[in-house]
Length: 267
Length: 191
View 1 (cartoon, one colour):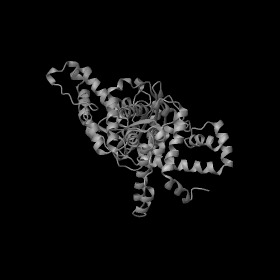
View 2 (cartoon, chains in turn yellow, purple):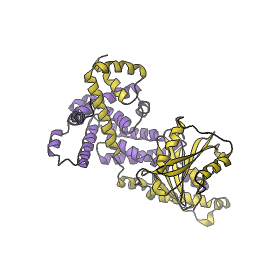
View 3 (cartoon, chains in turn green, brown):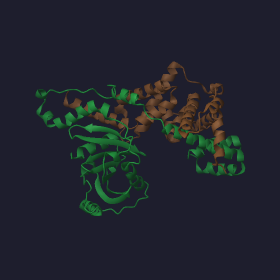
View 4 (tube, each protein chain N blue to C red):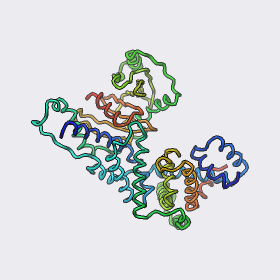
């Protein structure tokens, strides 16, 4: 292998995209070629610099405001007069009102959070480990057993949400207790045709939300919901009193958001 | 508004909320693709407009970040093709290096945040300065954290093209950043 031939392989090696067969050839070359070793170090350093530089770039508030005030992106509120509502619409009125109010409030309610090392983001580590097979859990077919087991783990100070998600093809299969940042986090794992969903419960506040979460306000429930993504995983956080609930799943964010809103109870 | 209209509006807002999660990512990509901040702003705003207009084409459960980035790329490509403002690969050698020697001489002091800010400016400036066909793979892979396969799908090109352009693009950047790249290994990271 010549140094010229090694160049692209070095690039792929740095990006962890080099197939094993080519890796063997490149390793042999690198052992003998000081020049290419230097090229490897310099390119790795450049990639790291680009990544770090990019991470410091944040969306300007002016652009954020511009996007949220663009009616092509966020719909303008449409008012409906009560006397024109059909009986069906009247029954659906709370949900429709929420939708309409969200349409108006959405532009102003997204903002950066400023909490370092938020618990809600740290908690998702268990989902990642479960997904990769690193986290073994003992499954049960008795949902009540999970609730009781988790509640006992925190001496009854709080309990998992115990959502019934059978309508979505999900049922509780296991429970976990994680100690994160000195606090106990209850984890209820749902699985089924609808995929996998983790429901995290812990005592906390909205300060436990990741700083870049998108927030919106459900006027009907008078509650904040925070949506954020982490490593291909979507999550939605809300607070019920002093209890924080985080739903995490690979399902689309809009579905997860709708699920959280439908299950959340106003404090 | 009819009941159907209300439901559609709620769905639209939910989609917008899901897309907004990727706002910072899109801005970072646009910021490094565009020639300046104004163009980056326009790119991101138009991406959201186009995404909302095309939301029915999005397949739930697929990679929304990649889908939005492809929309941004398509608009960027059209925009620059119309304005004929992008450099060709042949022009790579004509790109001027930033005045690094002058920067080093005029650097106000050892404060790390000042150095960091200057380093960011140099990296961003050099990245914006290389031809777009090399810049895009770097932005997607290094800034956007996409795999080669995802970057190839966004740019509609073979994976091998991504690899070769990344290699060439980083080399171009190194040539222009030689002061920094040459200086860093002396900090003890090398054996």
